[in-house]
Image (cartoon, rainbow, N blue to C red):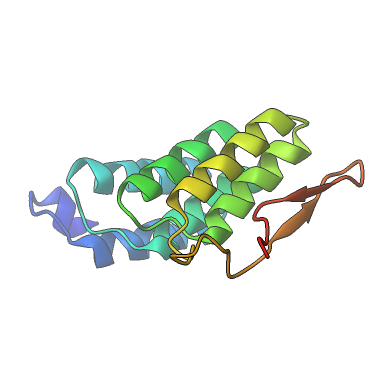
Length: 141
């Protein structure tokens, strides 16, 4: 991020490359730090960039951070169904079924795939560690 250190603000592509490389390397702290910096300077950050960070946060057990990144992605209109699923599954794994349900409700409210007639196009289920099934989307017939 030499460009950044010289006082220039990189665009979303450059931030995304750094953030995704750090996330894929498992450096959650620095990936989050650089994504936070991109958000602060209002860089145009991709769905994949947010997804990388929130997924690695969820996998490492920092579900609060994963949900914070999900909320930021949703606020920017780039949250994907996979992002919601990752966070809901992490809450389920942590035993916080109420929090998982709250994420499902957020997805329903923001789901761009909802057709005008109110039907969902897809169903995404996830299994909790206790074997219970948690429906992230319902199919309305």
